[in-house]
Every structure is written in structure tokens, then in C-alpha cells.
Image (cartoon, rainbow, N blue to C red; front, side, top):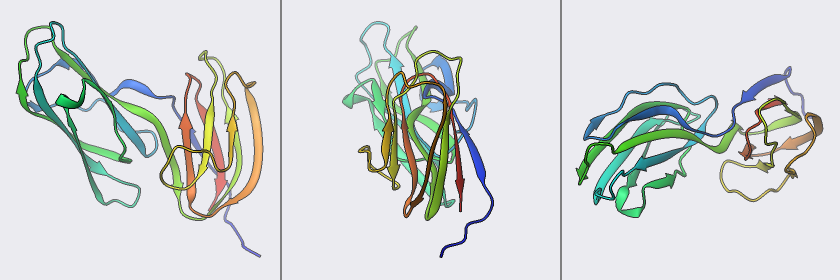
Amino acid sequence: METFKEFQRVYILAADTNYLVESVDIADGALTIAHQPDVPRNVTITVIDANQSISAGLITITGTNWSGAIVVEVFDLTNGLVQVGTQTFSTILSCIVSDLAGEEAGDTIIIGIGGYAQVIEGRCLLHNIIVNGGAGTVGPYTIINGVSGTTANVGILKANIAVGTYYYDILMSLGIRILIEGAETITVTYKI
């Protein structure tokens, strides 16, 4: 029989498009980081091109992952002005704009935390998920036993589910990953 330590709780924010870098004029150089991710998260970028003049540019996000290893993700603006990252960042060390072409007055950038939250990596016991109230749109929340992917293999708390506590008490062999949609925050209780 496996023994786990005492319960740990993690409060997870909803995705927020300008959580990391608030709206600033876009130009080559380093951007000021407003906040760090609440838990290991993917990042999102949104460039507002006021007059459809931006033709190129790179946004390089450098940070660390759950284990402290350096992670780098590069967003190429020729692939679109709104992009969702796939890397998971525990901390953000820098956000750099480079090779920008066509920027003009009124063009801005924001960088946020995406909907993928890596609560923990490795073996653990998922005790419960508490859906907190007051923000508006509830869920859905996709629960994944793993460190990647978007397909539920544990369960889904559906959209418009009631605010409250949902118990699982199940062994997660790879970790707890949650895809958060909607505006409500959640609290995850687990043991390692």
C-alpha cells in the first residue's frame, strides 16, 4: 500500500490574456513582466496591429519548467498575431521581441497565461477539485493524468457545473494537468 504525505492545495487562476505582460507598444527589445505564472502554465500572445502593417517578428519567452530546467518558446508573428503556446512555464525569465517589421504607432502586445495548468508532475493522489464562485462563466475543466495533451483521461467537470467541491481520491501516475476554460478559478487538493 502506498503512503502519501499530507494534503497540499493549489489555487489556480482562469486563463488571463495580459497576466504576464500588460498592454504595451510593440518594439524590438525586452518586455516588462508584470506577474509570474500561478502554477506551471502555457503562455499566450496577442498582438494588436492597428493598421495591418506588421509583417514579421519573433516573440521569445524564456523561463523554467516544473523541475527548474530552462524552457524557451518562440512565437513567429508570420504564423498569426494571436498564438497559444505549448510549453509549460513555472517562471518567466524574459519576454523578448526581435526582428519586428512594420510596427507603427498604436500597435501593441500582451502576453498572458493560457488554460493549461500543470498542478504537479509525477505520482500523486488527486483528492478533490473545488470550483470557486463569483467570476461568471464556470468551466469546463478537463482533468488529465499526465504532463501533456488536451484529452481528458480522468474526467471533465462540464460547463456551467455548480460551484462546489468534487471528490476524486484517485492515483495519478504521471501528474495532474488541467485544461481550464471559463472565468472561474479552482482549487486542487492532492497528496504526494
